[in-house]
Every structure is written in structure tokens, then in C-alpha cells.
Length: 224
Image 1 (cartoon, rainbow, N blue to C red):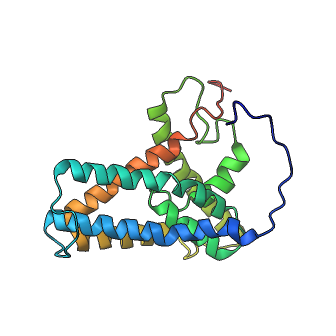
Image 2: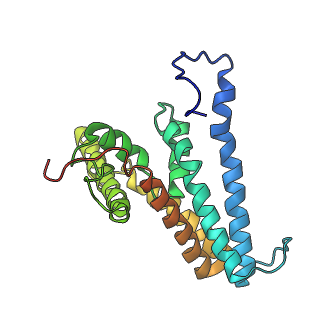
Image 3: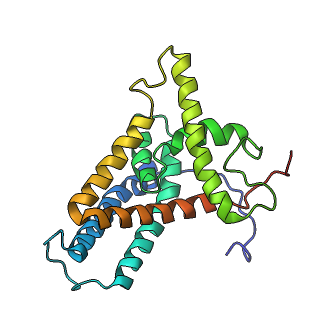
């Protein structure tokens, strides 16, 4: 449609704000339901869960399809929703964004994004900015690892400004550890070690898709 319609620069006046907000929060029960079904299906496949589900036994291609589907949903539409919520000032939306981002292995993406990417966009200091000519697959891992580093550095700066030690309970790394531990613990209870491994595979796929979105949006020259 963008190719055939004229530019639209009108200012939007949202008359019913909650209609714009509702999808951000309605995504939560849908996402939880998806992961519960994912866990139970894997549990039935591994023999850990005896919950009868329609559809019969799974084949190996079925399991691969589930992993890819769950990973895709973790990136689209979960990533844009989490991105919207992480820019809010209220505590609950930010916490919800952390839960959403846990599913693509980036629990504290809000910290790295706001205190790293926003400050250093399109510079070598921004891990979300690819170097011109960089291979997309190396960039995906660079962006993920760089965000981990940005989160740690930003957290340390914030704690030291408040006169608190690096390992203070307010360090957001604890939230990441807790959410991942709960998620993997539930997957282990439902589907055993194989369930944990397949859940991790879905999350890695989701993370690679999420980081791939940044590729090509902007770049820096080598040595700039």
C-alpha cells in the first residue's frame, strides 16, 4: 500500500487510548498459553507429561516445527511489544517487557537499549549498529553479546552513582537469572532435559531473528 498511496503526515488523535494499549497486555495470556502448550506437547513427546492433548503423538518434524514457531512468535510480535513497554515509566510495563524479552534471551534489553543503544546509535560503541559490510550472522551474535555488556556496564554505573556495591540486590542481572531459572525449571518439570534444550533452541532462534532486525538499519565505517 505504501507504494501506491500518497504520503500521510497527519497528526493522530487517539480518542480511545485503551484500545491502543490493550493489545500490549492481551499478548501476555496468549504468550503464556503458547508456552504452556509447547511444554505439554514436548512433555508428551518425551514421556514426562501424561496430559492428553488432541492431535496424537508428535514426530520429529512436528517438534522442529514447534520450536521454529515458538521462536518466531518470540520475535514477531513479541519484540515490538516489549520495545514499546520498555520505554514506559511505570514499573509494571517495564517488568512485563522483561518477561517478554526473556523469551529471546534478553531479559534486561530495556537497560541495554535505553542506556546503550539510545546513547551511541550509529557509532562503534553501539553493539546494535553493524559495521559496513559486516556479515549478518556475525552481527547477530555481536549484538546479543554487546547488549549483555551494555547491560552490565549501565547497571554498574547506576549502582555506583547511588553508592551501592556492584552485586547489590537491585542489579538487574538477578531478575534475568531468576526469570530464566523459573522458565527452564518449568520446562524441565514438564519435558525433562530435552524440553530444556528445545526451549533454549526456540529462544536462540528468537534472539537471532530479533537481533537481525537491526541489521541494515544503519551502519558505521570500519575504523570510524
